Length: 218
Length: 218
DNA sequence: AAATAAAATTAGCCTTGCCTAATTTTATTT
DNA sequence: AAATAAAATTAGGCAAGGCTAATTTTATTT
Image 1 (cartoon, rainbow over the protein chains, first blue to last red):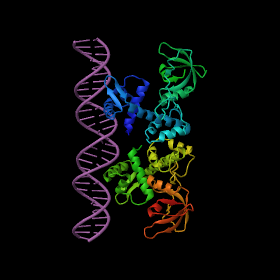
Image 2 (spheres, chains in turn red, blue, orange, green):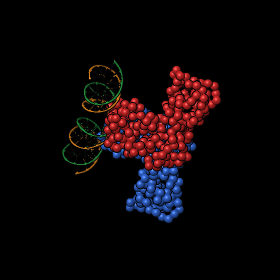
Image 3 (cartoon, rainbow over the protein chains, first blue to last red):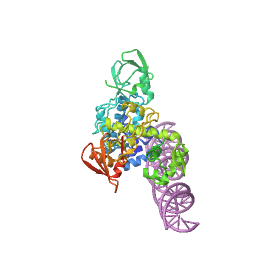
Image 4 (cartoon, chains in turn yellow, blue, cyan, green):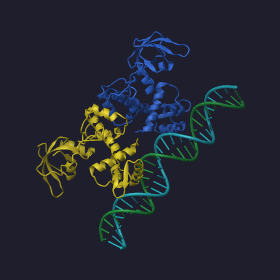
């Protein structure tokens, strides 16, 4: 099996691949993990030896079939634990990510499946991300952000991209959670700011960055 | 906070202290952990620097107040997770120890307390060991083994000392679990073997070692 | 195309936590 | 008490996974 560090790299590569679809460079990985690019180069060598990734200077880092499979299972564990922490232990939205970050590395042949069953086979985690099934399949990710929809559109918050507590706490303050209805009233051309109405309430203005981190259903 | 390794040493010292009450030597620790005594000496220095233990060649290793407190909380986490794995996820007796061994190191200010509440504040773990409360207090450990009771005595299995799966699977085969009534019929003087009756059933003979690992209520 | 900037890589070092081998200390026998 | 055995300790090393600083490649400007 993989070391803690290897797993974190795998997961990071998986996320970058899912999120952007852009070329995954050592620098991008280093930034995401808060590591030095030199360290990343070391690990790229190790993961390549283990045949979990393929690195090509032109194409960047790509996961092999095995790498994808392993990464998916880590994400599965992470998201299942998030559901557990929120639903069973009563944690708040913004507290669960870091704890799940540790729990996801617990390895046991049947743990994730048992947890999945115990939780009632949830489709999405508390941030709206789909939970991979034991076979690696998962529901589609939501991809349209609040910043993408046309002014006038009514939409539903389906997921959040950023899961830092700074963002989640801001959402909490605005009374936004998964399922909240939001109407995009206007986009300010100058800086992309968004004028929205939350759950039919009065107008609020949020930044473009904010809008890009809200994934919507419609 | 402490590293994974430091926590394992702390827990080991705590166990040796509870179990035997004898002088805790570097060799004893090394044996328990399956490490080399030289490594233990290194760690003794580190834990001493952190003021978690006091090491005196004559007295052996002793936990400081802080060391005791920290070790107790690790044990608390371990035992709570064992309850969770057995009761909520449906694991068997002999499978939970190793998983809890990993889970116990997850650190979060409120995790253990939330888990405790979620589980209904259990007093004992599935092996019959008392679960320390948040304040460090815990119910008394059972101390009389099946090998200690007088022939003729009827007693109840309250806990097991050995938690290896080899022992637990043997118990399962004999249909013994926490709460099972056992009568000690006879002790064989030659090798200390015990003739017992399990739940009123027919006579069975078990070894002295076996008896020493069963803790009884009466 | 040359100059500059950015990214990738290499080299060498650090800490943690373990190891073996050698040595010193302490205990146990004879 | 001397000899022997066992335990503890020291010294030196190793792998993992980071780091910084220096160098080489690759991209971007001018």
